[in-house]
Image: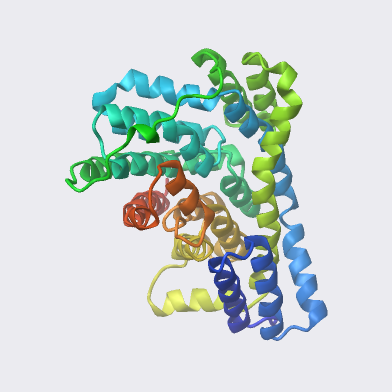
Length: 420
């Protein structure tokens, strides 16, 4: 069967979307417009193009529903102060002498329990900067510890990128989270090593008193703070432990409500859930635009041409998984968009080529964390603001972040090659 859209059309559509994002147009509108133009340039008529866009967006319904319900947990962890308490406790246990590992591990855990990576960095920043100042660390090393820790936690979390990738390949979310434990540990080790390397730089930016903020909420105890994440992860773990499936659609909000009750904030439930949905609505809208582009790309000849290019370069078909997510996450400057586009577009091709769905999903999810923090995305600016860092200084950390993401991608790929 001939694909209705050409590879050129799909690539032009992606390029237009990227250019619009760079010029600060809303990412969702940029992706929708890019999909429309790409379909028309790719040889489809208006009806075929719109139909493909709608079909692609409809494919996002399932992950979007799960992401929307995850907002209860996200809102609860942030508004109750549970996430900050977890960070404070871990950092306090490690002490100032081991501040960088403490910051990296704390951010990884906050992200792993379901907080979006940018929010995890923003949440951990006050604690990280305070302990960094006490330990006389420069700002670059502290920020890299947070960024790398967040990337490690992100690939083993019930976050939008993991949910969307699991949905595209039809694999269990918990299985995908467990599959990337080794890549996440590799990323964490690389993060700590690179953070120590940056800490030795003599021209590092010093943390000022004005950079250190005091908590603006009464924090729960550590035991109260971990109730919600433990409930959510415990429910998700029932499937591999005793073959009883609790869908993330149920497990994540239940964990959120447990966090609210344990923290004694029952009367604030409505406000907390409203805050939570405000944090996930943006990524949900983004996924609709991503789905529209995926609808055009998946019905184009790009898949076959990509595989043919790999074969001509004498590279195995499995390389399609990490390469596609690295490139698409970089193009969109978004882990979620990159992982979703790569998995929605190439899932069928990878399975047809004999690559196991779970391994493909793991490689794509890890690959999407490599160059996802480029300046045309919001993550770059949000994390720069969290550390009170200038554009130029934040830009210099990107190569170190890329090494962190690349380490987890390489380990995920090696695990596939070893048959694990």
